[in-house]
Image 1 (tube, protein in one colour):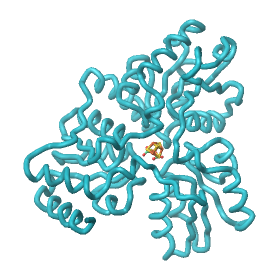
Image 2 (cartoon, rainbow, N blue to C red):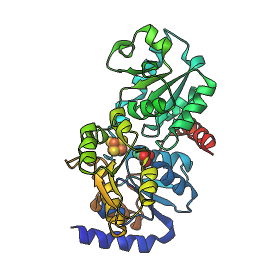
Image 3 (cartoon, protein in one colour):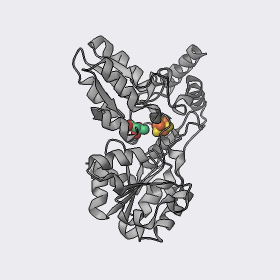
Image 4 (tube, rainbow, N blue to C red):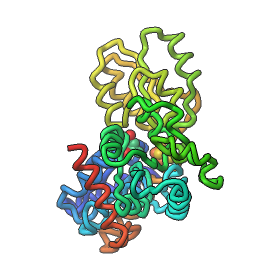
Length: 352
Ligand code: CIZ
Ligand code: SF4
């Protein structure tokens, strides 16, 4: 049960000491999150992994995050994902075969290597980051998407943005790009379901991916909240649909949401459109300060793959480390890691 797992986790942490760092993403459940040495978004956690001296990085998050940690640490740390089935349904909506096919189809209309910067959201497989590194492209996160797009447009006239259409559209819209110059690439259809003119006129070609958690949030949830709480404030993640973001008072990444709500005044009342575990923890944290934090959807919606990491899996990988065995290590092959790191490093330069 959970209490025996807790005891095993605590014992393993004591034995491994500074050789071990446990990273907990904001979307992790409490039973796992409470054991984390560091918490944050995917990028902050990977940078903490890179800066730590720990030999073993146990990443309580999802697969692409563990890959980034391995890439940024040059494989010099052993990065472990407690449950290998913890993926990201959004990341899985794009893959190298489909993106190459898209690039090829675009090249029948325009020369993408001259005119299109491929930009991948960090929520993507390592080989897609490598694709960007190999084609003059770059990675972005939900915190720096605007700066990354500005950098991209300074170099080439168009962007191919994958896998999340919403982050791309919301960011582009707020930069003043007209909606008809942001076209959606439906990877199930020939040439993305677009006409040659649509491709020629586009500023951003948006891959038709989305987050299954954030798609649950609806504009009506915001309307209902505002009716009941005219002074309430609404904050949403940019993985939400544009109709949700445009009805919100604030839009930003998980780190931004935490920072903004933590800076509020007693009496403030928030409606928050992002993953349930983050929102529940923030509500508990703010309640003693007289700040009310409410989840956007009336139904319980969690990230089911984040939820796969449970105390059982965490205890199991740690018991193995204590016994001198490494299980569930995430290793990105060097021929992928090197170009992927190039695209990640470019992002870090652009943001600094
Ligand atoms: O980068 C992350 O951790 C994710 C998935 C979202 C965010 O806004 O932090
Ligand atoms: Fe992927 Fe959405 Fe889960 Fe984030 S919340 S890991 S984008 S499925």
